[in-house]
Length: 283
Length: 329
Image 1 (cartoon, each protein chain N blue to C red):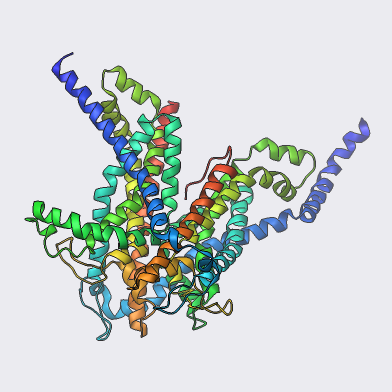
Image 2 (cartoon, each protein chain N blue to C red):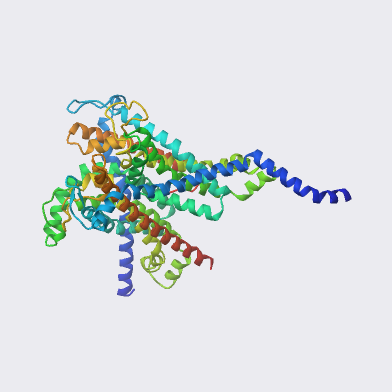
């Protein structure tokens, strides 16, 4: 073995090891984040955390029941708004539309998907806050729903197009109309993938803070109605983290742990259980 | 036989009209129209977004014109608005983020695509996907309570004592600032670079590698001199995608950048970014001009990410097409 070849092999071994180190570093960040959250927030999670309202500054105890319920309400309303548009729009793209319309719709969806979340917040503010002159749960849900549309739409389309052609032809040959075929054959065949995509979209917007800052705003108490501001987990984490109070920091860690736990759980469920045998979409 | 052949010409139009009626009854036509409305609403929403951003920022656009981008005064009380410090902060933090994230991300992608057996590569990619799902406010939380103290106590003093002669690493070590924001952003965009680059690398045809190995190159040489150049455009696409994410990232940056509109050569200096100033000042903006100026900043951010995303998609498309084209040839 010449010296040159030995050198080349050495370089090869070294660089390949380095790529392994890179991968190790990237993956270990996840476990570090999780571990650090558990270490700092684990002890602050108790029954009160889930059932009590926040207490005034300086008073120990209290929880984030209003923020947890607020987040749940926001997500539910966002899904009610975003999922149908994405889902039926996806059906149109996959089953009915011509090339040109499909191109335009896809382009619009990709554009919407790439918009920074803070700009989505501005848009929702201009459309759903400014005309009514006050922050509201509905405005926050509108902002989050907007972010769910492109993910649901593109994935619905993709999974519907993945359904083999002969399934459609078989259904048509038995005398079913196009819509009957879609409802009873094509969508059921693709539902696992579509469900996965919707769950992942939900998990993604669940942690969004920026679009809620000036739409759902925040609330120290229970939100009295859908047209009133509401607390939400991500916004509370933000507000507590930048506050100067130790007690609030403690609660921010706990809320962070709960939020991340839920998001990772939904991700794992969607990717591991639901998507057996389906190519998982990447948000 | 004869009767059936006579019936055939009549059957055509009858069958046609009946099938149209039955199509209507089955709801095919209704379904087409209704689903079209849903699809069209997506286009409408996107258009409305652009129109709203444009209309709502009319006031500052007319008052300041192009000087909005070149002025460094941000004084809401005197109604003087210049975006330069925010644009500077956004670009500097994104640049720092890419400097750290690109080598790490591409290295990891090479490991996942080229080296690791599938049994190892798939679970690792799964963890990377989970990492991409971590919300930015969580990164901000760790940024505030973990990264900032580390930067203040260890990293910034170390940089100062070794590379302190550079203007980049001078000034007091507060912990907050451009460098910290860049580091947090880097951690956030690494998963995107890895996922996309890995996919692009996997689409490189197998014979490219085999040819390089057959010519006597080492494993690293085949990867670095053949596979990576082949996937170059797609990897560039992944970097553009990461850049777009980094520019638009709000919460984590807001929490660690220091929120002071300064332009300083030192990375230790506290700064501000476009997204951060919108997040901080939007709810307290009094007066139409102030609000309009913030919305114009949003418009700038939108245009920047729009262009970058478009370029990224084009580049990834070019690479994957090239890969499949060669495979067929």
